[in-house]
Structures are given as C-alpha cells and as structure tokens.
Image (cartoon, rainbow, N blue to C red; front, side, top):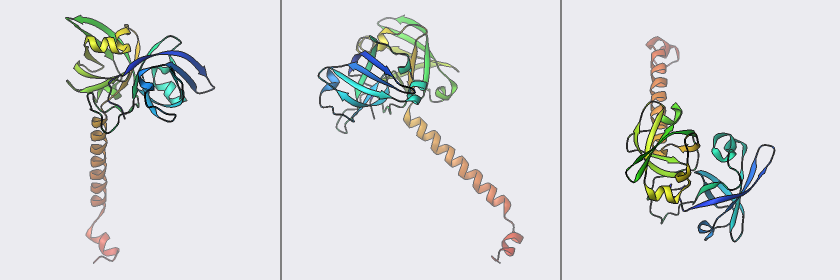
Length: 221
C-alpha cells in the first residue's frame, strides 16, 4: 500500500525484455534507504517487487499483464519514473490510499497555465470515470491528486509547482499516456453495493418460486 506521495524521480538505466515480461533497472538514491530484496516499490504508480539493488540502483521484474495495462511498456533508457516505497503503519497518510494496481491508461489532452498551477486534463475510459468525483482522489503515475472537474470521458487536476518539480508529471506533454488508479474506497463501496443487489435479487427469486403447495409437498406442512 502507498500514499501517492512520490519520494524521488528515478532514471531508467536499462530494460531487458523477455518473451512476455521485462526487467527494469532504475537509478535511485532516497528510496535505497532501509530497503531489501522482496520489498514493494511503486514505479509510476505500479507496485513492483525489488529483485536486486545496489548503491545507486534497483531492479524489478514487470509481468505481461502489467506491461499490457500500464505505461511501463513505453519507458526507455533515460526516462524519468516516479518512485515511492511502501507505507509503514507509523507513516502519515498525506495523500490517499494507493494500492499500486493501475486500472487503465489515460491520455493527456490539455495543459493550461492557471497562475502558479497547471491544469491537466486527462481523457479516461468509462470504467475509470465512474470513480471520479469533484474533490475526489485519483492517482496519476502514482501521484495522489485531487480532481477539480470532470465530464463523461475526461477529468481535470490542478498541479501545484511542488508536484511539477518533485514528480515526472512536470514533464508530461499533450498526447502522453499516464497510469491511472481510481480511489480504492470507492471500489470497495461499489463492490459491496453489487453484493447487496445480488443478494436481494437472489432472495426475490427464491421467494417468488415458493408457494404453500410446494412447501406442503416438501413436507413443511
């Protein structure tokens, strides 16, 4: 679990492609403190497992599904990626709960200067848009941000200078694809409501099929 507060921007130093997977090597500094092999690390908001590290780098494997659903299949040597270590129970939750499980890719369609901030508009599929509300949380490339506006197929966030400076979102251009993860709380609520609806439907189906005659025939009378 992560908070969406990027600790540093790493530089991709190498990618080894397999048949259906890849291994990525990333230059890092801050996140190397107190890590070990097997630890979780968010790379552009994607939860990966550290398989090797040294004094100035980490390595992690990327599976086929992750390559298919995220922008990690687009990164190349020299690219900047957002890095965040997994939360500890004693940490402050300055962002929001981020699982590191990317829902989909979004596309940057507009960048607009608004005083010191930059308004970023991102086009996203309907499966993600149902979790979008004004002033709700969204993770973009692993960065916890607040939705300022939305419509049927896009939403807008306001990026302050600190976010622009401390993350790779400061380098995004119109047309770039970014990783999107919807609010995990909204997903759980949706799932619970689905179960409630299913249980109600099942109960109605059972009740509609029961009659006094059927119960008598089964020996209840």
